[in-house]
Length: 186
Length: 355
Image (cartoon, rainbow over all chains, first blue to last red):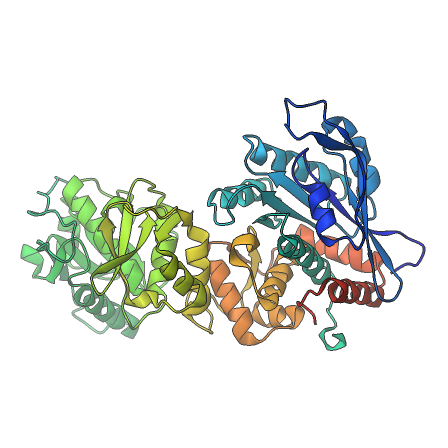
């Protein structure tokens, strides 16, 4: 990897989907958040929300820092999605499956990020639904109908193991996009 | 076709009901014919015999004069075939080569699978009862049975249900007469006690021992679970060789990802799926690209096939968009550097896929 380029993984999704929670689950240090009181209680009842971004970090043993960014959830900050996502290793899209608009949100975000970079790996975690909820299959099919083949999982981002599943999948997607994996190197 | 009277007794409980009879005649070739035709007709007869007691009616071999259904091979010029067709009576045509023939509703192309015969028999019964030629089979009347000889019958049954899309019906899987599994008619959901779910996930439940019959919805408190889970694990554990419908030399791609949150895949499963998501591949390419054993690659392909997530790719089809993206990424990223970075991230987070 280039030494002068920031290495980052981006967590995105609508307000209340769990982006801050997911970053907190894996960041080496407590994430830096720009949370303020939520004035849009009609959309989501949570007391605070991220208005600029969340920031966490993985500091690898060779000194490399991997930044973890959480985008603001509100639509009016969508201009930041492109700024944050450009050049990232991949995008983790988180959705609140308990909302009536979850499937609609999925398609909207997926298409938005496909426009930003059609080749960027991204994985989708749907929270607040049981992982065996059969409706999750419909989400993947809805994406497939739009020509987007992307992993869609039911996750609980409060569980580190679930966030790691998303990251591991992202890494596998990245790895599979390399021309010939060097298995002997591992 | 005139509607035939329905079977004299509806079959809802396989343990107590007496199945009515239907008669089926197989026209044997009179002269020297392709050996495959002889084998195909023998296979048809054997399948009919093997399914005694598992279909909604009992199919019995009969003469042409007394039969409800006539089976013949595509090259047969027997006059009685034309008579049957002119009377709109149901016929089954056996062919030895694939063909695009939309005028033949009941066509079996040899070699065919026992499951195809089973589905066909149930469809024929529906046609005879309703009098509707070429009726799309109604899975509410579909009974599927598995045999010990074929670990794929259950998986193929689920795939068939998925194509039929009848969410009103339920099939009950019994083991030694005890109901342990409920599958909705479109295979989108299923229900079972937690111990059965765990057995399915561990591969400890042999679905070839189950008999699926039409039944009622689960009455217990089991929440409906994703049918993808049932399909994935029964497909994965069915065999370490490719499913009969898959071939080693064919390239496949994925139409959608399985729900990893539900499956909790092993690292090798994850790598196979990611490799297929990146670009279409045949079995040997998957083994190489994912760095997994042939057994793991075949099992994961089987699981994807069972879930209806595999798409056959013709040799002339250009590479997928994903593979084009992969090439671009490969060109812009120093590969060794990226591989090292991913390995370090894995090590840091304690992930196991490449460790």
